[in-house]
Amino acid sequence: MRVKKYLLTALAVLLSIVYLLPLAWMVLASFQSQKDILAGRWIPSVWQMDNYRTILQRAKISNWFLNSLISSSIGTAGIVIICTLSAYAVSRMDFPGRNLLYIFSLMGFMIPSQAIAIPLYLMIRKFGLVNNLLGIVLPALPSSMAVFILSQFMKAIPADYEEAARLDGAGELDIMFKIILPMSVPAIITVAVLHFTWIWNDFFWPLIVMTNEKMYTLPVGLVALAGSDVNIRYGPIMAANVMASLPVIVVYLFMQRYLTRGVVLSVR
Image 1: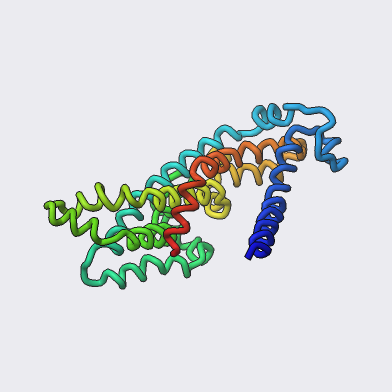
Image 2: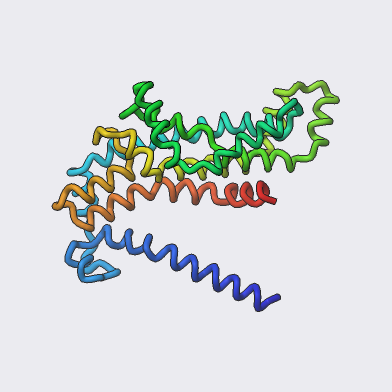
């Protein structure tokens, strides 16, 4: 048993190193000159902030950052509200067709986003939401993964709490907002972190609905920046990637404890 524990620990450390090495190189390269990067150095010969100044002065990264922040924040809030109510309905309430509704809500797992991209784009264009952040937010709101995680967590809450509340005269809304939702905070935070990260990093859909450069999100803007301007070199691109990664890293570090607990309890 002890040998197995050591092997698993060694494997976890090895995988962590493999995942963190590219991130470490990106951060170090953002402080290097073009010459150091091309020479394959890990540690800069001279630490400099020129790459960050260049990307802030020459690119529209502030607009892209704001677009990503607004769409990710509003989209995440909408997903949490809508999917929390949906998950409560299919996990704690008893009504005809509940199981069928739950199955339909999970069918989104089986449909690739690329398969519905064209009809979804035509709908967004018909509503006049091309080059509008709502064109990113609205398609993200129905999330099968969020409903699954939240409903599985809520199902695991003992019914004794609900029965005791009903004996005290509590209604459905009181039970949901005062008992079930406070106990589901780890799952709600898990859903919020996962979907904030997903919307923030999404490249495919914003590339389709955003044709105006000022309305790009960070992933789209960084790709356009790297491919269109030959005078933007590796250092500024690495600096831009560091800036784009910081919000997701900060959110994950602060919410890691809730994220781990929410995932474990939702899939048990």
